[in-house]
Image (cartoon, rainbow, N blue to C red; front, side, top):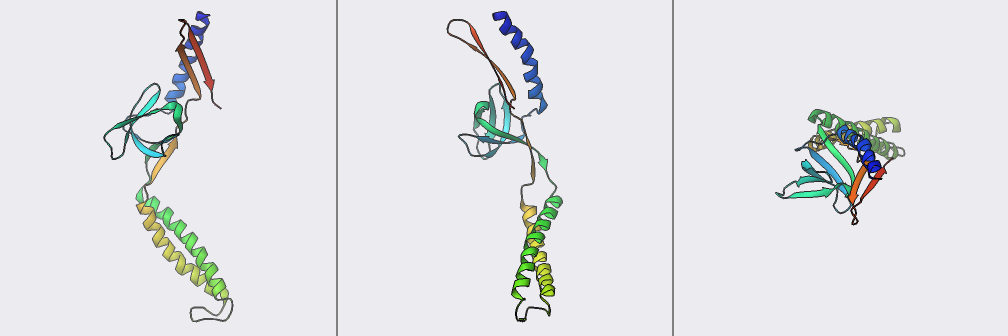
Length: 181
């Protein structure tokens, strides 16, 4: 029986190493951890132990051990998007949202009697409102985009295959294997 357990460990151990090396975590990286007892937060990775991540909380000098068993989701920062790309994305969304709102507002406001802000046709008024609101939305969107964090986060797959050997009281060992799909 012991030889079967030893054989299983020898066969399955390289598989767990291959999975762990698929996305290696390096000390000093920024990681985002969702854990049952802690709110989702960004930490600096100090080291990876066999059963836990040791991280440093931002603004604190003490380290925190987070057991792998409690981690629900783990992401690693792969750098920041350039400021120009964030500004452009924010401007695009700002123009789209406020331009659409302005177009609808212009069409609804100017569909009846022409007011002093309306043009002759409701379509022309809707286009004018969409252009003005879209320009304002683009400016605000670019400002918000420049102020955003801009981190690119990559999901780190948690162990798909976990092998554990636990000593028992009677001197024997228990072998546990779990596979996640």
